[in-house]
Image (cartoon, rainbow, N blue to C red; front, side, top):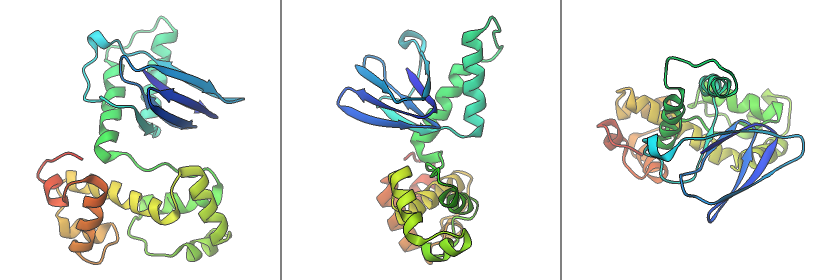
Length: 219
């Protein structure tokens, strides 16, 4: 089963996992996993069933995914196909599973903060992860304060600004490496001074070296 948090938030107990599902996120719950859902006020969630007998996937654990623009279109198409007599000629459920599996492999962008100033900073870093500006510099750029930005990142993404920036850089690195870029090229594209420091950060995040991923490994 997959739960798409369209608006608001929900608390989901999945076996031994407690998940706070936020707007714009999707939760994968493996077949046979006991779960309990508590939807917050003024919230909307869409559930999608994936029959175990006919679903082939590498997803074996409870997984949270940030829904991007492309995934949103696929999910809306799936919702429409389940709510009307329209039947698409393609397997939309397979497309949804593919998006989940790509995210688990580290190809998904990190969660964006909702506060406009913090979101502007996050969006700029997604476009240019190598941008070296400090939080105080960003605060001046978006007419805010470093303290307010730090508070927004922590409260709305579960990460400090520095942690979020590292996550952003590592997600960009995975995309570039899978696209065939060299480790040296990726090092500078995501804001590191030398391949050694980049490799340490990458291994700490993904458990493998950049060169291993570039040769076709998985995270």
